[in-house]
Image 1 (cartoon, rainbow, N blue to C red):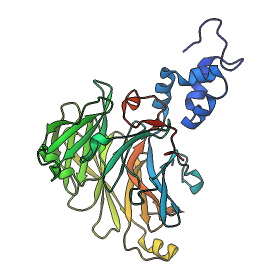
Image 2 (image 1 turned 90 degrees about the vertical axis):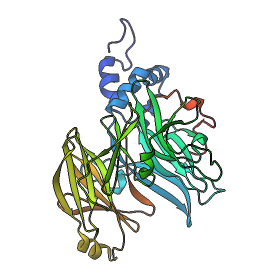
Image 3 (image 1 turned 30 degrees about the vertical axis):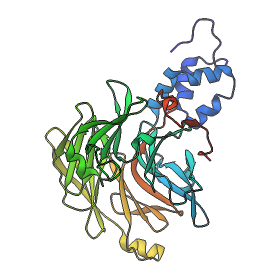
Image 4 (image 1 turned 60 degrees about the horizontal axis):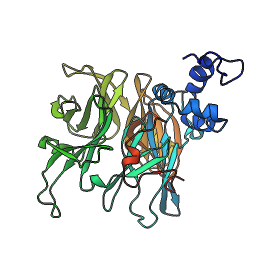
Length: 377
């Protein structure tokens, strides 16, 4: 985008096509925020909506880690940590939190949990009782979502026809609200309206599902051998053929294909399947990763009674993140343990984030909305 004739370029001697659209556009969000402090011209350029949309489009989609920070034995805050593995083996020094959210010190049992992510927006929950919150860690915007009290969150998605962001929910009648209609609901952020009932009682099976994945305009879930999809435009569910049996499995996006990882009953191997024919629901077995159980026991001197395994996309293949005790291990598709972190409270999620500095209009409409509040530490 050329600057108007006679306009002063942002950097003397360098046209804005280069300084703005080839240099600034490539910087991470935190660097863009620092650039705004240089002068009014830099602030104006880096705050323009066109620039922010183009900047967001260039951001990588990175797996998310959570990191609980402790004071003694009490959880003090939650760190939101993108796992940037693009340069090769990630090290502990590369694990930089993009935000830290303080917990309510008056409710030590109400720590934040990451439950959904979409276009740089995060939905968090806190229990006892269950509450939901939304935030943008890049812009440090935060708001509670009291309209969701009593609901179960199934997923979050953009709605292209309206430009809205919506949450898919499920509600079961309780003793406090016996007249409530059970089934699925859709809540539109910033609409000022309560969640809208869309029936779909079949979603009841998803109440205890892991995080959903958005693929080709549909939310997908996998619970053992049950796989379901929700069309975000038609607002309807359908069952999808699954290649795996009962057990622990979760969905991943591998290039332009939907994939699924399945942990064996003995928790010693992970099977990876891909769906090259999405419309025909045709699955192909890709490979089996044998976890280096003996090596882990020998290297860390611990018995492995329980671990949590997450497969994440890595150059059209997968990288396994294995959490046990206070260790987070990286295992490649050949079953080779090639890196490890030792940090209390650090663990993987099934979520991925694409950071954004775009200002969403719905935030100021939410009751309790704050920016740069004491929630961020």
